Length: 209
Ligand code: GRF
Image 1 (spheres, rainbow, N blue to C red):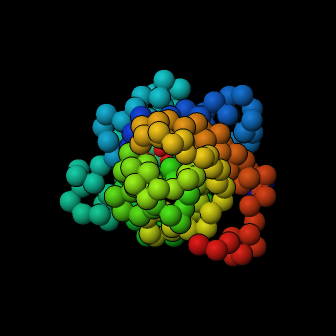
Image 2 (image 1 turned 90 degrees about the vertical axis):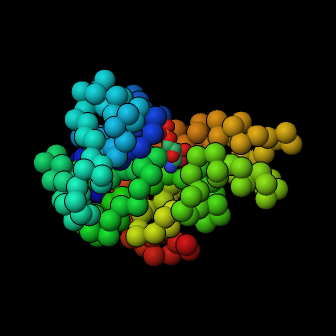
């Protein structure tokens, strides 16, 4: 992808992945890339504060303020068009993107998940729930996954993963902390693959998911 990546980050939570991406851009580990807007469905999301602090347009767009999902989608699409967005990064966005948006940005939407997909993904698998399930299942390793987004939760071709071994006395909280450190490293790396045109169609087709 030779064009500049104009990214919209969607986030519902504290926004540490957004911050990691912005840091990578500032430190020029990520070039030819800009976060042009941040969209949240949660009014008090830390990600919106991080956006404002960095003078990035920040939008609170909640389904609850629209009478139907078409109008909600239209509001999001209007922001994406206004900022000429050509790539979407989901960073803890706790809402399924509509098929209309997924189709419009086909193969240009990334998500990060705090486990080694295809294990421990799907509806309800977020936050500490994921790490609790990993520990309860007696897994010896866990990690983080960046994947392309399709119309299902935590589904779609895997772009990048990294893993760690669990300690014998691992808790969901300790695991979450370690995996967030992995996320902050691999999310900018995954975006870089797209900036450099290294994540090509062939790899997508060959990827098992
Ligand atoms: C991350 O753990 C990510 O894997 C998941 O949601 C969390 C978001 O954290 N999808 P933050 O808001 O980026 O700190």
